[in-house]
Length: 224
Image 1 (cartoon, one colour):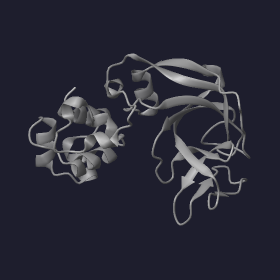
Image 2: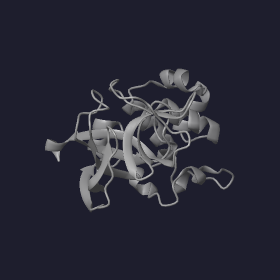
Image 3: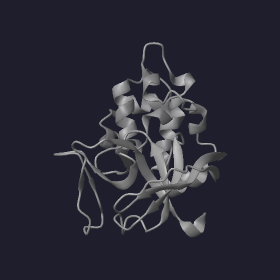
Image 4: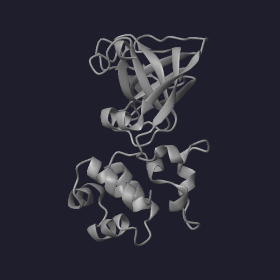
């Protein structure tokens, strides 16, 4: 699919007019019209503005046919990313399902056994239910505890997408040998926050930690 069609289809999926996307993104209307018509050269800065306005990972817009020798778009995608899997076709994708890996929405849980199964879901389902356009680096693990209630129910399956996590997003973080699912605070200090106010924030200062990815959705255990 051409870049212009991707931008237009993503905009229409968000139920935005061109004028509305112009206001949100800061990209001029004349430029947006050219981009959607696949005329003119889009800059990396404007592509980032459009992706942010549509709440889409910029890698969704990247495909071999969109990459110019004078640009550096490829550096924004994972080296192992299958870019063809990011199209809007409603075909089935297989997502790694780590049933025995638990991220605690409480005080922390660790599991040595990482039994890997596969969960088959359609891209249409993932788009409709979770607003996903990029389908790379997804996995499903079990979330335990009640520190993210009411946002996340206790003992639900978490759909996690590996990659950058923005301020305020729910993420999965490894602290030493334990996994936590919390909301990320970047400023003024790096902390993990619980939506359940009965739990104290966890400071990451001085910790051996790794932010693994963001939680993009969840399933109740009865649905899998």
